[in-house]
Length: 204
Image 1 (cartoon, rainbow, N blue to C red):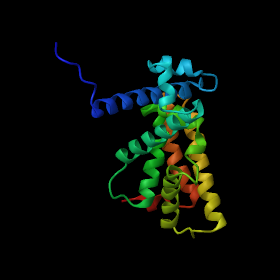
Image 2 (cartoon, one colour; image 1 turned 90 degrees about the horizontal axis):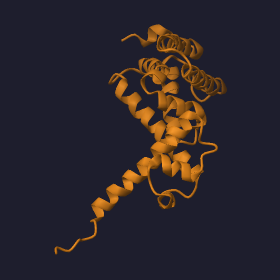
Image 3 (cartoon, rainbow, N blue to C red; image 1 turned 90 degrees about the vertical axis):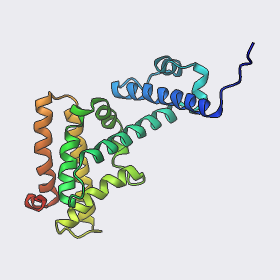
Image 4 (cartoon, rainbow, N blue to C red; image 1 turned 180 degrees about the vertical axis):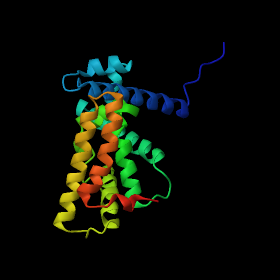
């Protein structure tokens, strides 16, 4: 009878990756539906279809898992946004297209939109590289439009723009597809007006 050798390291790594991904996916489902606050570890592992004991091989607590799941959703959003934006666009065009696409996120990727609206601080967190990335896009457009950087007014406008984007993102999760598209188209020029950037600046 041939001997059965233990799985190799590569196979074990793939299995671990699948298990961790399943836990992340389950956590994202719970965040999107608003059921994360009261979900037990047993409920999470059942939803992920993994053994209860597997949980602590990857996460020390539910909070750690949900933070990882939310962070993963932000990364997915940023990756999707990069794929959607035109190459080599000027800062204002990049911002207006970024805002327009973000406004349609609930239409294109509803689960990701639902997660972001429940974890809004992740997008506007100056200490997180993801938040810095979004702030940088807004700041570049403002600088391109003539606003003086590194002033209190500049920082307030950046914060106001991010707040407006996040507020509309939250609103769109309860709108019809046609209303989501309309909201996205209204949001983009509204953000430029808020920042004091002329829409004509965004022309190619």
